[in-house]
Each structure stands twice: as structure tokens, then as C-alpha cells.
Image: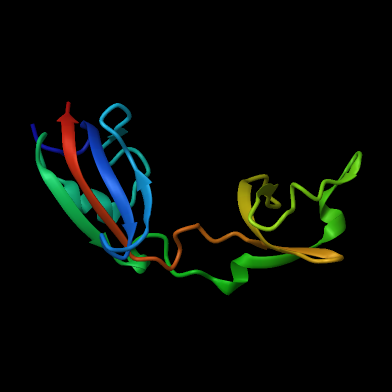
Amino acid sequence: MKIETGKHVKLNYQLFINDTTGEMVEETTTEQPFEFNFKTDELLPSFENAIEGLAAGEKFSVTIESKDAYGEAREDLVIEFPKDTFMGEEGIDEEVIAEGEVVPMQDQDGNELFGLVLENKLNSVVLDFNHPLAGETLHFEGNVIEVA
């Protein structure tokens, strides 16, 4: 059976930045494969197009340019907030807004967004709302385990 719309797919992969000589940022295992329903779950369309038609046991090697993955990093998604934005009942928890932490926030429509703390200044905090892989070329190496 081949991968096509609506099929349940299990696969293993390693995800690298740029190519297999770059940093590996994600890896699945046989015990915990990546499972999804083809073209019905929200996956990168360029990844889906690359594996469409493959069958169980087949290997894949897919490179996706940043523009076809998570786009380029956007400066307008790096935002500086007044520190009192993070005020809770017991004050500001400095551990929550430490550099490198991911802070959940909401936009004006109530949608949850996640910002990476780039800088914790005296009176403000700089958050980056870009996808962590924005601006990166992605390379997947893997194999299809099952198509049902």
C-alpha cells in the first residue's frame, strides 16, 4: 500500500539543519515512530509531496528550503514588552522570563503564541515569536514503517 490522502502513516526520520552534516534537531525511533494521517493532519506540504506514493520499507531523503518550510525569520516577530506585562499575583517570576525560556502568551483574539526570551532587560523583555526552525533549510532522512 502506498502513501496517499487519508492513509495512516508511520515513519522514522532524522531531521537535520541544512544536510546530514548539519545539526540533528529531531529524531524518532522504531518504538516511537512519527504517526499521522496523510494530507489530513497539518504537516509541511513540501514534506507530504516528497513522500507521497512511498510504501512501507521505502527510504526517503528530503531537503526543504526555508521558504517551503517555516519561512524566513521575520524581524517584526521579535517584540519588546514592558516587564510589567509579566506581573503575576506574587510579582514577576524572573525564572519564567530568563533568556532561553519559552513563554506562552495570547494575542488579542485569544490565540496562544509562544515566544522565546532573547533578552531580559532591566525594564523590558524581548521575545521572538518566529518558529524555531524559521530561516533554516531542513533535511529529513528516514524510512516508511507502515501505511494503512
